[in-house]
Image (tube, rainbow, N blue to C red; front, side, top):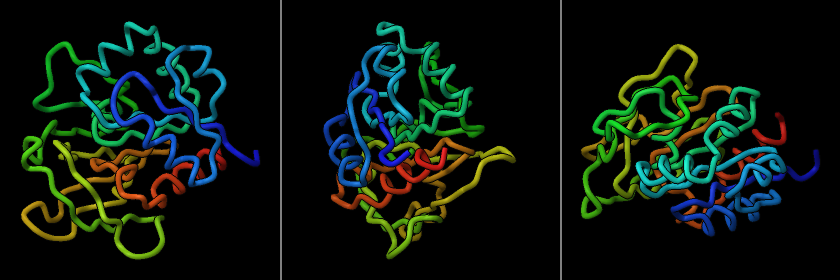
Length: 200
């Protein structure tokens, strides 16, 4: 596969920014709102936004079962911020009616770093992403409190009050970050995911 086709779940959140970052990383990127559009992609990005809203819209747009099935079949999926929450098997401080895709064996704490006013930026070294530490932007971000045996921790915050917090993980073809790489102009995380999709 020369150019992987990667969809961005376009129900809510920073969809355009992810489409642009994926295109910069060499993918054929397109928004996904319907099951037929999901069928046409090799991988999927679940963007940041509001995880409870995304959870509801996934049901309204009849995408839950198709996405669950594609994840079970090995489709690469990358979730950033709210997308990380959607991929977790357990969510702390979430709403009782909130349902994700439970693809990565991890426990995440929703809004762990605080509210919008507590947004911050920090360097994160990410295993598999070459070069200097990634300048990560955290906005009402979750962090990972527990990972299962099959989950690889690929990024932690290197300094400041959040030092050592887990903010990037991978389990097989599933990738998740607490932060928003699509807001930085640095395509390295998206390039990492594009290569993951190409290999799959």
